[in-house]
Image (cartoon, rainbow, N blue to C red):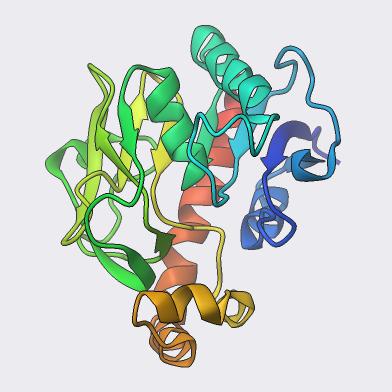
Length: 237
């Protein structure tokens, strides 16, 4: 059996686990150690794993009073950048990467995005290890009201959407941040808060119907990205 490697995963909310990426990364030979930080599980003081995956949550990157584990999470992100350890930050995780690397995030900025959304890949994605060769306009599941308003200096800007410019970027050789949820599935939308969605004039059932219509494309694109990430981690390990 081929040797497997392990990624550290930081989970910020009970329903915000690695989702479909757990199976896809396992398919690529990458095991996950999930730390349920929201439940008080301690994070390591340094990153001694082959990769880092920081998930989403309803916090800002510096919301330490509500989520005291964010400070050590930022430390792990900094560790990943300093060591060039492969990492992916999803939604809040992407905002954490942007913040640690010198970018900026703003609360309730611009128009919120929910459900399956059309992205546009930028020219910089053409030679990116994860995004090269993907469809020009892949769908992605969104669930955010906060946004990155400035990318870190020198970051590679990879994708945008109509409402949110900074959908995907890379810092250095091996740290990716995304505003959307490549780990999510149409079925997962059924667990989203109807009260929160209704405040923004959004119908949860309609979001799920639209995402289900895009299910095949969502799976094809983001499974490929997950497998590419796993392969990159194993190659570096």
